Each structure stands twice: as C-alpha cells, then as structure tokens.
Image (cartoon, rainbow, N blue to C red; front, side, top):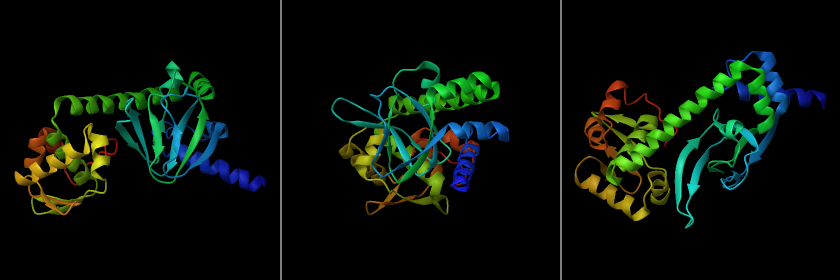
Length: 255
C-alpha cells in the first residue's frame, strides 16, 4: 500500500512538472504541492465545475481534453477555450475569490489534479517564485481572452470560420502545394459554439468561402485550402501568419 501511495505521489509530481505554472520549481516544492493534490477522473460529458459554483480549487489537467464555456439563459454556448494536458484551470479565484468564471466539461475521458484554493493561496504567499509563475499564467489567459473578444467583436462570421480553419491547418493540416488539406472533426453546431454564431450561419459561411474559391469543400468534413496566404488575408491574420511558418504554429486555446 505504501509503495502504491509513493507511485501516486510521483505521478502527481510529473503532472505538475508538465505545466508552465510549476515546472521551474525545485523538486522539494513540487513534492510538497503534490501532497495537496487530489486526483479526479472524469468521464466524457462530465462537468468538472460550473460558473454558478463558488470556486473552491485550482485544477491541473493531467490527461484528456476539456472545454471551458459560458452559457446564456437560453442555454446558448460560447466556448472560451479547449484545455489539454498541462493546462491550469480556475487560477483566478485564488486571488479574487468568487465564483468560477466558466463551466468546464470533459470532451473526452480526462484526469485532473485538484488543489484546494486556500492551500494554493498559502503556497503562493510562502513561495514568491510560484506567485510570479501564477501571474504569468494569468497574463497569458488574459491575452487569449482579449484575442477572443477581438475575433468575436471585429470579425464577421465568414472571417471567423476562415480563422478557425486556419487554426486547424496550423495544428494538423497536410501541406499541399501552396495550400493545405484539413479535416473538420467538429459538427457545425460545435463550430458555432466556438465562433459565437449559429449552426445555420456557420454552414452558410462555409458555402460562401467555397464559392469564393478560398476553400474547397470535399463533403462535410474535408477542406482543401488552395492558398494559405489568401485565406489568412481574408481572415485578417495575414501579418500574424507571416511571423511564423503555418505548418509549425500551434494555436491550442481556440480550437
């Protein structure tokens, strides 16, 4: 039994080490933090926490994929981010208390490490390095949310769809001449939730992009992008694309 407990503790340390928040900390501190962590298993579709609950813990994603959403009174869903292994969830309430700022749902079977909010607050007070790492993680989250606000407020639906396809192309697209081939794994409704729109509007936007020649639809899922720069220019992200090679850029927060 003791051996199993030690192995579990080592697993927790490894989970912490894979995060931006904890990876630079020394081994003794990592082990100390690991002792505060409680492992939790989630099934697909299970809610980790709700925006209507008082925030009680910080969560480290160990495996799987979860989506962070906000819902309207009419149950319309806006996806804020997709979170994978190494992500830190609900860090903001460590500093300002209150409710969780979103609802997080497991899109696949997932494992998370839960650290009590008050314990995390004490750790930040005792260890200044951890405090500054937390500030950096929160700054990154603010930057991501600012980009999401810009996309929703300043780009029309066709541009958002184009940007969404470009994101997938940068993550897992197959290069083809000057363009790329991608597979849309999400349904039209799931895409709409990420793009702040409705299923029918997203479908029409895909049709218009196809008719304009910016993309070529092969059924409902397969998309060929004839010219990456042309689609980037239409989406309003041409300058960003120039800074980094399309095939190697990873944009995991929005997909």
